[in-house]
Image (cartoon, rainbow, N blue to C red; front, side, top):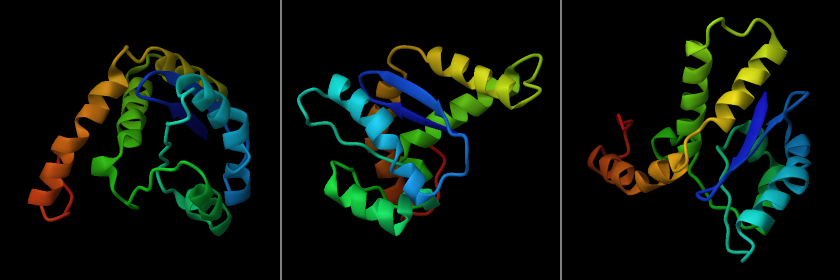
Length: 148
């Protein structure tokens, strides 16, 4: 499993997680990876972060921590609005088109990290700029799933 940090301004590290992610383990990630990245990219202290509401992020311990920090609340199960899904889809596509395909977990990690580093400048800005359009589509669809 991997965890990533990125911003409108820059791509941060792609982190390999050695074990299954739990709420407690999730809380060990921000001090080591999120906070250093945010202090550089958002040195004004105005940056907010978003996560994708997977189960460890929604645990009681993680929810309490998130409420105390600059976290942008995101409704659960809302892939149409979540740029994290765009990143995940792009990484999956990069792995699928790799020839030869990764043969083991270390090969997969290498492909993911290489693909992560190859995201073009402006990739995230394009995704973020599409959010108002996505929101309008969701409103028209009365919050049912859409094709964005």
